[in-house]
Length: 111
Image 1 (cartoon, helix red, strand yellow):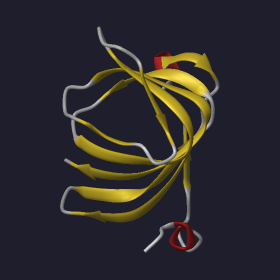
Image 2 (tube, one colour):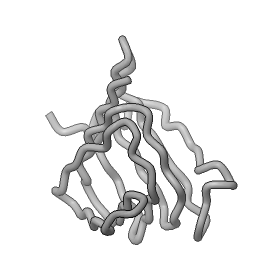
Image 3 (cartoon, helix red, strand yellow):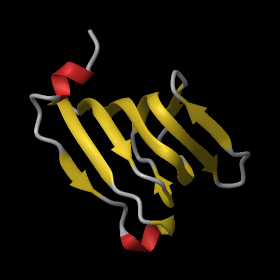
């Protein structure tokens, strides 16, 4: 099942990174939470261009649906992700998220 038709029936949430985490630009988020239960969260997230610091305390599986983002772990090599790419962010991941082109992803988070 493709999630795009499903998000039309979900009220989106709008947010942004905390101002003290923003490095560049004016990134804005739209999130369609499709499932929330027992520490499991699934849905679609979209971000506009900008760069900010991230820190993960949970597991997250992501699949990029559109756009281009660069994730860089502290002390690591930048990794570029485009439509069709998937990856896992593990608890303890700390670094930056740089949205080069508005990025939309499917996500599954496990606390």
